[in-house]
Image (tube, rainbow, N blue to C red; front, side):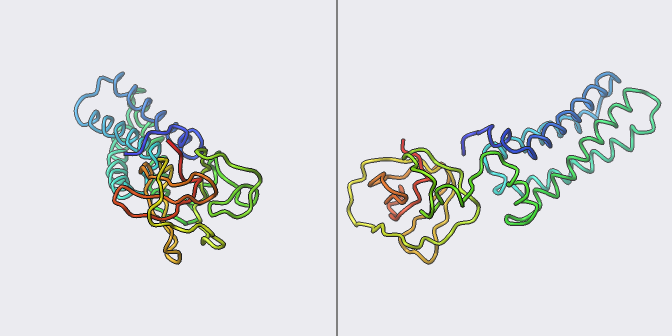
Length: 242
C-alpha cells in the first residue's frame, strides 16, 4: 500500500475544498440528528457518509484514486440515493433540528454530484487535467529538468525527485547502455508509477513504492533491476535513493 501523503490533499485546492465542504455538511447533519434525538436509519446514512468521506480522503492521500475509481463511484451513487431520501424526509419539517439535517444533506449532495463527475472522468480528460492543474506542487516542463532528460534549469541532486507531469515524452537522445552484470551498489524507492516507452526496449516499468537495485546514481537515467530480476533504465527523478 502506498504511504499516506496529506500534502496530496493540502496541495490541491479542489480536493481540499470538496473534502472540507463534505465534512461541514456531515457535521451539520450529525448535529441536527443528535439534537433531534433521531434513531434508526438516519444514523445508518450518517455513518455511511462518514466512512465514504474518510475513504475518499484516504484514496487521495495515497494517490490511488485510479485503482478504486469504480468502487468510489458505486458508493457515491448509493450515497446520493440516501442523501436525497434524507432531504425529502426532513426539508418540510417544522423542527429546526430536522431543517439542519436537510441543510447538511444538501451540502453533501452538492459535493457528491461534483465527486461523481470528477472521479467518473477518464485520465487525460479536461476535467481531470483541470483538477491536476490546481495542484500547488507541479512541474513546468519548459523551465525545469524534464522527466526524460530534456532542458533543465539547474542540477537535481540524486534522491530528490520532482513531481512528474502526466505526459511522458519518448526517450530520445538516450545514451545509457544496459550492461548485463553490473554492480548494483544502491537501492532506490519508486516515488511514482512509471510506464516504459514501448519504442525503447531498454526502459523499465515499475510501480510507486517498489524497491529497485541501482547500478549508478549519476545522470538522468539509472540502470535498475527489479526484484523479479528484470533490468532496464529508469528516470532518476522518479526514484529516491534509500
